[in-house]
Image 1: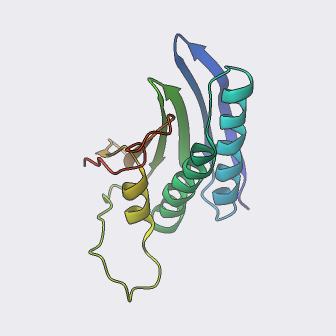
Image 2 (image 1 turned 90 degrees about the vertical axis):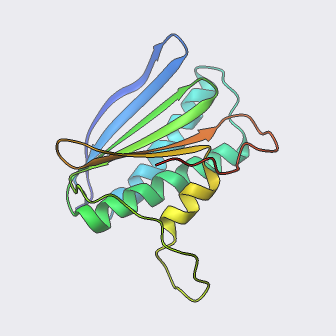
Length: 158
């Protein structure tokens, strides 16, 4: 079953940083749980910390998390960790999984059905990073909190 394994740091504030993290068992149900966890986190950021969270951010960050966790479930087939941080005007969503294979964005293909998740993430994020870890990999996507004309433009790095 897709069960949330553990949750830490529901709302830790260290200066300007607010963070929360959760571990999942890797079942497909954890994708929806991760989206809900992200929406709850952003709601708390707005309500408790008083930071403005736009409708764009409330929609975009759960989408990014959903795509990253979906890839972890689909390709790593085991546990994954989700960490969310707000600081310096941005939301950082980081997903760790146990598969060391680094993701590669595929070439655009209008005829391809599915497998567009990484393309979507890279298109809507301010920054995108992939790091190999001693076990597995860590993928971080950054979404700006401010609704500016360039806030949803891709400035991706790998």
